[in-house]
Length: 203
Image (cartoon, rainbow, N blue to C red; front, side, top):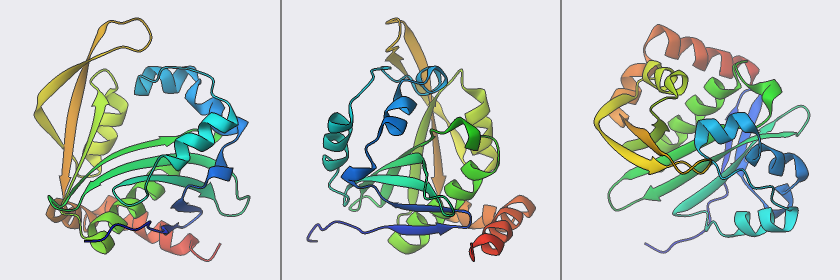
């Protein structure tokens, strides 16, 4: 299969997920990567990058096997987050990492709406059959959230080095199959979120 760049646009109600462009590099984006909360939650290095460095980082994604997606609020066109997806088409699986970088949009439904619509795109449009993700084991909030969205916590755990102090941190692995995803969409919470997104798609 010949590789090409996917021009991704996912309507998430109040939000839009699209292929990230080099001109999305901004001071706002850079601030996410040095935010203390994000550093502790995602084990980031906490380095302050310039816009030129960010633009080069964005361009490093081929947008075929390695996606970098922008999460944008529709009404204001403000960039509020990002999604990274590494896709293995031959094995029909993908590994995902998501960050809502703007603090004002956290814990207000943006994560749910964006995650649900993005998963639906990967499973139903792209045709991937298995998704994986990981989180620091101490981040029980994120792990619990993913489990409520149908993800299964795997027994195998890994250790990674902290980018803050060099200590070893435990990493939990989670997975979600297309079959489990489809079943979750039929649950009460799944239907409620999808109905909310649908109602907001005219915005």
